Amino acid sequence: MDAVDELQQARAEINEVDAEMAALFERRMTAVRQVLEYKRAHGLPVLDAGREKEVLQRGAARVSDPALREYYTRVLERLMEVSRDFQSRQLGEFTVAYPGVEGAFSHIAASRIFPGKKQQAFVTFEEVFRAVQDGTAAAGVVPFENSYTGEVGEVLDLLWRYDCSIVEMYDLDIRQNLLALPGARLEDIRQVYSHHQAISQCQTWLSGRDLEVVPYPNTALAAKYISECGDCAKAAIASADTAALYGLSVLARDINTSAQNVTRFIVLSRTPQHRGDRFNLVFTVRHDAGALARAMQIIGSRGFNLESIRSRSMRDLPWQYFFYAEVVGDPSSARAREMLDELAAACSQLKLLGAWERRDAEGR
Ligand SMILES: C=C(O[C@@H]1C=C(C(=O)O)C=C[C@H]1O)C(=O)O
Image 1 (cartoon, protein in one colour):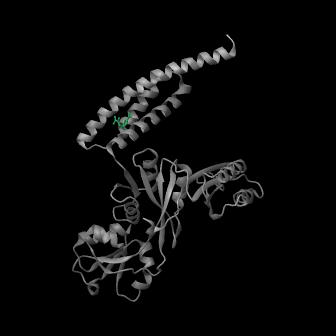
Image 2 (cartoon, rainbow, N blue to C red):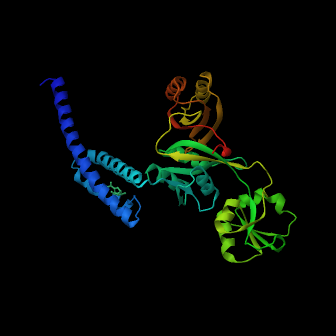
Image 3 (cartoon, protein in one colour):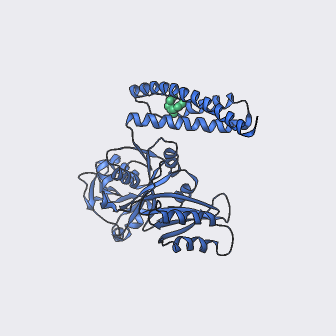
């Protein structure tokens, strides 16, 4: 048998296997549909991490060739992701993941970007990324930078490590207010609870008033505490949305010193958006003289305006850095694709993080 015959025979075998797998896939999805009906009837979530672990372990043990085991595990992982996607869509479920607690600024941003959608809180930024990557959530909303306190470095690091795409950026005006129990009067307040950043943003308003300031893990928890403590001499500094959530009244509005306090949030999705008028990249360059300048030159010489560039250290590689760049333009244009190809050749690693249309908080 010559080489061409061998190729044809192998491909014929693949076709046969694929045909069998298509039939098996349909059979599997019929069973998935039954599982979904049970979950719908009992109000259970789509993801069952314990069950998935079991499926992976059993699956890996069935593969006799140890070199192939890891690849089969990946097939199963992808298969279950598809199955979860299918179930979520059938349920019409669109869950938005955000970090922190109900009433925190991330929750406020998530509710404004996705009004009426189911919101789910996660403790850490990383859990939000994981939820988006594994399909537990259709979207994630995390803070990216604050006009007052700067970038949220951990989120940049996670963008480098996780397979999540940026599909939108949203600017939220951060306004701090003094919240207290309904009926409480400003002159009765003795203690003020809030996150240290919110406290420092309101320093001018606080100074000269005879108030004891009590730091709290975050503004929403401070508001929650005030709503539960029953003490009219206590107040919290938080947003007006948080007041509504915890049934508090606003005793003093907009007490932050700087009127310009904006937090930019990013919306994460597993499905990249290919078009937009902005896009962002992360990349690493070789340790050569002028390597970073060359990368920037490639972006600039193709007519793309670099709106921002930052460097971050790679956590697991001391003294190695990656760069984050925000570029004006449509990444799907021919000009952008040429620029990206050239850039990829000049960088050690390059990743397009996402594309989005610029709009401000009033844009929705
Ligand atoms: C089908 C189910 O839903 C999800 C998908 C799984 C699968 O496709 O095997 C396993 C666990 C769940 O996360 C299930 O719960 O069994």
